[in-house]
Image (cartoon, rainbow, N blue to C red; front, side, top):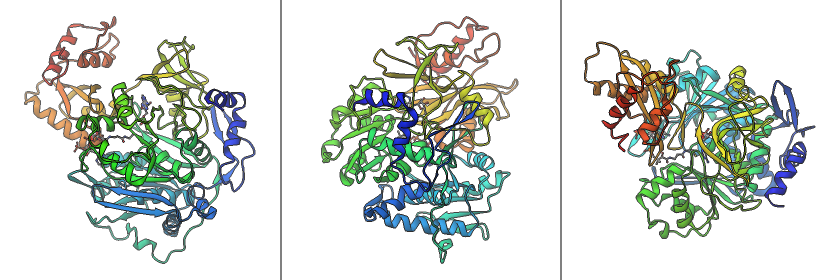
Length: 630
Ligand code: COA
Ligand code: AMP
């Protein structure tokens, strides 16, 4: 069957399609049906089943005789370490860790925050939670204490599992002081923490609250897998929205198992036993779906890579890892390839490695610019697939499903909707538009298994953010179009989310931090185009009357403030002081127009602008920092 047949078979019988896919999962109690309509446009998949994620990702492969197969390859060019963990070792390690967590009182439904770098123990911590039916929430290491505190308050974890440190090139990230600071800041306090002591930095433990990862496992009974309901939350993953309060995306257990398992062959074209590598971080959705769960559920070997595309030690790192570990499918962000291309445009490093094992490459997380795709195709001589998805969906909305059929590539398009997604382009009034016409990208409800059923403790926000604008549809927050052949094109976000080096960030959250500076009266943050990172945040500051200090000092202070409050990952380094901000007559800041001015892209003078002269002032201010130079 080709793509059209598979898509049509889903459309003809969506529930039958997913029940069929569900047969690949080991159920404690199989679902009686696929879809559960909760009313009010809320849906759940396989809700009445009983199942355990860890069993499906680990134990069942051991039972099936694959225990000696490598489950995880850890490759860290930063620490010069390589290590392999087989499925049977992984089962034993995870059962012990789960046993130790249980002995300290962690049970099904309890939340556990995981704050760890790219080491196998991060996956083990996730799987140990899954084994117990505890709900994990992984927090990315590049976030600061304040962001961690916000997540602690919202998820109210019983325990936090962390490492003593993370390692960025040339810098040790001191996790433990960040963790201590976050717990101090948070209103909710966890009962205990578990600290994995890395040899690069041993953290000081607080007696009675902090336990050593190894020590606390001593003498405990290993835990068996606890079956949970199909609609039991497997995890909460916080992602940026319009405000500083991140959204807690929930993933249900059964839907995730069925959907991710389906994608491994149909989209990523790997068979059990093949090596699959997603060069991302467990703190992001890609890390959840395609470093941890997807490959392991499907019986693939996954790679935990602690390094960067360049500088660890050079622009050949990706190719070394692919060649050395026999990677068949490789997934990364376009920004990573842009970084490699910048250092090695002619592919000298590519030529140094035997890449015959590599059959396909996948890009996601941000727009894949045609230059980068063409460069990768020329260098690697395999299909390079741009695919589009979000933290909310957990897997691809649109892709080129190589395991079904390789469709022709159209540069600038992540190809076609996957089964489960009826992608529709809507105008402002919510009416479908003609092919080739720009609009809001929406997906007809219900969304498929594995996507978000709700937000943690925030059902109203869930409805407001995703369901209310276009009744009967999920609002993706992306704008774009579809062509006559059904190919999807993603053009821009319709909200305040920007994408910096493949990291999703909220300009609204940054504005909240800037506004907290005592001398800032008003501010705006926009995303300007950046050759390497796709976008970079840029702040405009209006200072209080009477502030006559050097403006450069205020800029330095707000840059420091964003790093302290949100974290280095915000990459907030650019800001200018202006007298006033351009607004509509009703007071809405014209951020889009400021982006056009900064990027030197044509724009129409907004009809509702209160004073057009402000745009010249904005342009002049931007020119002082190297932007808006046409
Ligand atoms: N822990 C602590 N700090 C982190 C971090 C982590 N896990 N990840 C990034 N940071 C820090 C970086 O050290 C950097 O700090 P600095 O301001 O002191 O230099 C800052 O956050 C910004 O990081 P980043 O935007 O990633 O830029 P970079 O210059 O370090 O690297 C790339 C640029 C392109 C090489 C890098 O962004 C990259 O590999 N991107 C791939 C993105 C990706 O995989 N996204 C996941 C979606 S698929
Ligand atoms: P995240 O939730 O971090 O995965 O970010 C999701 C957002 O990143 C999407 O809503 C898009 O705006 C953007 N994005 C992800 N993949 C693509 C892609 N292939 N092309 C264009 N934009 C993308």
